[in-house]
Amino acid sequence: MYISRGGCILSFGRGKSSPAFSQPEDAENNAVFTAAMPSGYLLLETEMPIEYTVSSDGMFVHAIGSGVVTVDEVRRYMHDIAHDDCVKPGFRELFDAREITESRIVPESFVDIHKLVLADPKRKRGNKMAIVVGSSSSFHNAKRYERLAMSNSQNVIVFNDVRTAKIWLGAAEMRTEPVEQKRG
Image 1 (cartoon, rainbow, N blue to C red):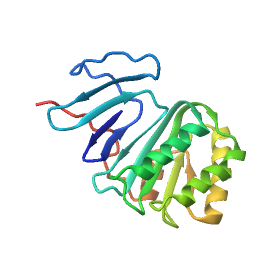
Image 2: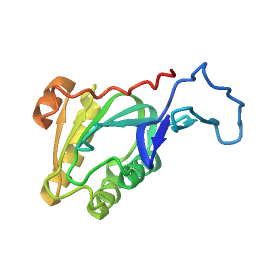
Image 3: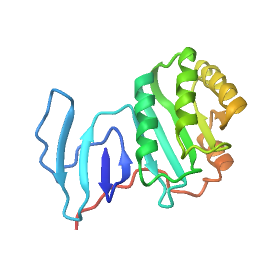
């Protein structure tokens, strides 16, 4: 779900329906609705396998992948981060892949994904990225990306525990869950 104000995406991805808004269906592209909220926010809902939240200072991104994830969806996520005005250069990133049921990201695509990392001015050399996985096969696949990234630009470590990943990122005390907009 996108919640945007002044060009900053406050929450992104596979949102839940909100009973406070009318939701005419658009079956063609799965975009459910667009509605102006009284506070000046714009709400767009769409089905996405990767959603993310940004800390209030723009220096921490918490992404959660779920369901089936493809290389194109990872590219779209990276594009969205690069163009999100709320994300600041040098940010730290937690990519939680524990809810992914099927990854269609093959190791051969890691080079293309890494080129996007190198092209993004917000992803400065030495940026910290933690990837959290839930299975041994995912762990081995993510470790392959870790080796590629660490040799070139990013400081990437693969974890199987989200708390440990947050500690490594220096984000153990940060709120990283999507914030629901409440109507007054």
